Length: 359
Ligand code: ADP
Image (cartoon, rainbow, N blue to C red; front, side, top):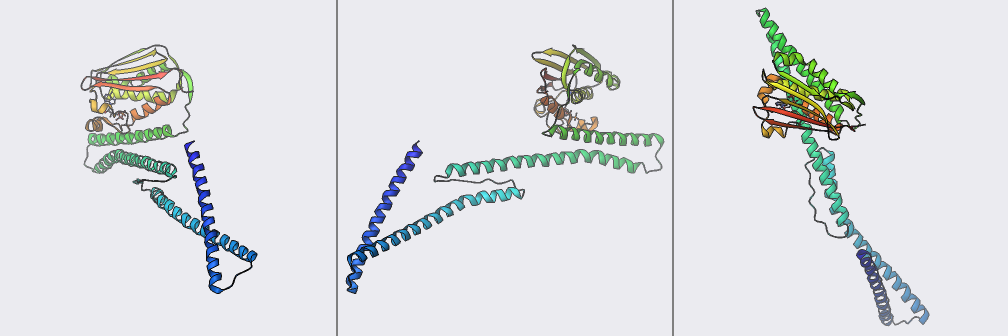
């Protein structure tokens, strides 16, 4: 409203200025012509004099106006170019892959809002691209690291196997290491493929109703050789739960939580699994009496490639992707996953899934 009144005021003032200039030009032409006629000693007839004065006045007025407009336009154009140039430079830098750009601006004038918005947009785009690039670099370096260590092992033991003096048990030991490291590589590749599929914006869950309690019981039985070998006491308390979700993806979640509990619980420890309906959903809980996780590591557990204790993990195997995959799968089902842990005492993972899960 205020803007409109301002514009009307500027319009009226502009008109008054033009009329004043027109009057001044005509008066100036009249006086100049009179002086000229006096100088050359010739006085044109009245009508011819008036016509000549008017023509000269009009020509002078339009000439003056055109000059003013050209000067004003080129000044505005120069000002606009001064504003646009850094924006263009920034966009060119971004196109070349340099995301370290930040446009400083201090605009005045009536285009302020438009240009400020443009600059803020470009700055925030550069910031986001920079973050994504940093994440991409970190991801590549993590993947390379995870691939490099088993490959180094495999190459080393393959070379050692060429020694003909090795006895049968040494040979068997080296071959077993090569097999374990190859399996680690294969698991890493599976996990990376799962993550890529889960990251795809177009992922479609293959949802159908199935017995969640049966699935968990089946997984516990399938890994019995591992928990029996460590003499772990495994208990399951599960109510009958019919759940609508992606059976395969959820199986990966429970499998990962179970394997972690077995892996990080010393021999003779306990693992308790419960599954029960709760407020508007179902709750899965796995409690182990294992090594636990330090408070500062608990916040990073669900990050890709995070391992709480790298040295120990190297011996136990694992790429630090399992919990990241679990979190992604649970979130695709609109659920939540949390960990509580005390170092040296044990860890509890709790998953909540809404019964009106992803369609
Ligand atoms: P990994 O393949 O290394 O097990 P995860 O993403 O499944 O990867 O787990 C990430 C890290 O979280 C593990 O390396 C481990 O340090 C920690 N962790 C996960 N579960 C447990 C657990 N039950 N007890 C102790 N630490 C755990």
